[in-house]
Every structure is written in C-alpha cells, then in structure tokens.
Length: 443
Image (cartoon, rainbow, N blue to C red; front, side, top):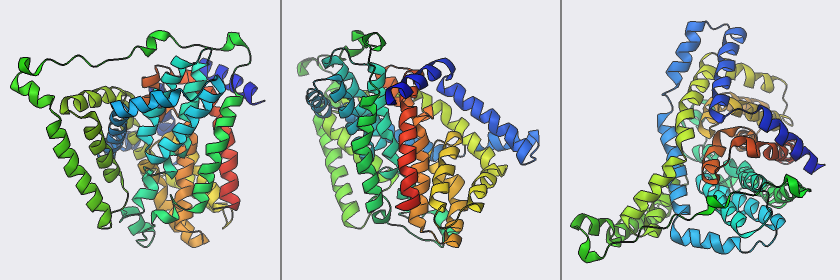
C-alpha cells in the first residue's frame, strides 16, 4: 500500500507540480484574489499590502540564509565530509541507505535545519556512489523527509523566539517567556521526535520500487569530486596568498569565537537564531583551517540559496497580504471558534499547516498566528508552550509538500522538486496522523 501511494503521488507530482518559484507566484495570486473577495479589500489596497510586505522581512531573511550558508559550509569541511564518507560505508543495501539518510536528516535537522539539509544531501550522494541499483529520487526524498522535525529542534524559530523577550509574547501573552525546557526539551516533543526517528525510515523503505525498471539510477558524473586546487609552494606565493592560506587568522578568530560561545552560555545566554549562526560560523572557520578555504565553501553554499533569495520577498509579500487584508486573522480565528481546551492544539496545528503554504517561514508563521493563537490559548485554558509547539509542528509538517525549503537540498542533489514530492506526500500523510494524535491526546 505504501509503495503504491508513493508511486501514485510521484506520477501526480511529475505531471502537475510546477517549479517552486511558479508555485510561489500562484500562491501570491490566490491570496491577492481572496483578499478582495473574502475581506473586501480593493485592488489598489492589495497591491499596497503585497508591495509593502515584500521588504519587511529582510532581517529575518538574512538570518535564514546565514543558517543555511554556515550550516552548508560546515558540512563541506574536510573533517565532516570525511566522516560522511565513512558513514556511507555503513549501509550495504538500498534499504539500509534509505534508512540511514533519513535518520541522519532527522538528527541533523533537530540540531540545525540548514546543516541537516546539506549534510543529508551530501550523504545521499555518497550512498548512491557506493550502492548499486538504488532509486536516487527516493533516496533524496528520504533525506528531505527528516526535515519534518526541524521546528521542534535547536534552530526552531518559534521555540527560540519565545524563550527570550519576544515582542509578540510581550503584547499578546502577558510578556511570558517560555524556556526551551517546556518546548524543545519537553518530554512530549522528544517522544514525538523519537517516534519519527524510528518510523519515517520504515515508511521510506516501504516505498522502494519493486520492479527494476522503475529504479532511476543516478548519473555517475554527479559524483565527480571537486578536489581542491594544489597549493603553490610558499616561496612562490605572494604575501597576500600567504595570508589567505595561513591557518593563523582562522585559529585566532576561531579561538575568540569559542571563548565568546562558552561565555555566552555560562552567563545565562539561551539558544537563539543569532547564537546558532555564530556557533556554525565559528566551527566552519576552524574546520576549514584557512580563510580562503572557508571563503570558497561559503561561496559554494550561497549558490544553493538562489531559490530562497528569489522567493523570500514574494512570500513576505504574501504574508503582508495575509495580515493586512485580515485573511490570516479570519482564517485562524475560524479555527479558534470551533475549538475547546481539548481540540485547540489540534486545530492550531492544522491551521498552521495550511498557513505554511502561504508563509513557509517559521518567523513569518509566528508573526501571522502568534497574535491570534496566544490570546485564544489563554482564554481557552491551553498552555502557551503547547500552543507554540502546535504552530511549530504545523509549520514543519506541510513543508513535505511545500517546495520552498527543499531547494537547497535539491541544488546539492541536482534533482527537481517533481522528482521527490510524490514520496514526501506519503510522509506528510503519515506524520500528519501521528502528530494530530499527539496534539489531541499527549501535548
């Protein structure tokens, strides 16, 4: 049954799913029209909401790009890459490879979503290089499937935001500060992640093609290693080249960074987007050893951000239309109105999953739903921490069929969104059922 579902959704995706950028443009048009029909906004007002919103998210956009770039650059450092090659040798069969890459993605994304996305794509390439007759699209889809846990981990935007002095919490939730012990490290959250760590690899393995003619083996040219250009002898280097290839600067900056990180946590600092970026930046500089190697690694990583950079303004514009037209409030309030203390986390999760199609950003999701869901949670009698994690899980859930965040992984794996979306749709259905149960009976 699982294999049949994967095959069916893959056929649908290949036939009907457009490029991720086209998907964003279609969503923008849908929201634009709904704003006029549902909320009664004029054409001129909707253009103002979209145009005004497109550049309102630049700070957060830069944080997101840095998470991806610093995580990617760290993943491509020689120590990490060498470890990936060793890890890839653990799997001996296609099924083992699919399970392994899924587990690595779940764990990697729990620590840092940018790092997890890239390291799993690199591991998928190594596995496909070592194992014959492996269905490459499913292997890459399996890597992406672990992304469903990102918002419940160390780089999750919402739990990190509410762990500090968040403006939305200050205005709409009595200024409450929710420590990560009640969100990321709550037993309910950790149990759900553990369940997915075990079950999603099984779901992915069950989707493996039965017939050999259905297996799409990857082009061997994809695996050509980009070896570093041989260094000149020191005596032939210019003074500038000696500085670029000297580890001294990297080690000094790395040492300063490590001291800062240690002192930050010792003095009571908490996890946040900026400190996560700082940690991965520091480790990347250290592990690449020389400044010029890290510069090249960052340059390569930035290439995978093109789709995100292009699409982020449009999704920010969509968010502007959703908020300013009143669509987001109308939509979210509709779920609140049919909720009680038992069903509120479930309906919050469901609404967040739908909103994520239009605002595929954790921070954007929080900006849209936080002001509505937090006061409602207080009125209904549901904990702020539960409500926040319901939004976070809903946001991460529909990423399985929202192509925005798959772009970096696909850039590394050299596949199209249509190649993997059928398989991730099956993961969407499975994780949706399990998480819904948790929202109703566990959280």
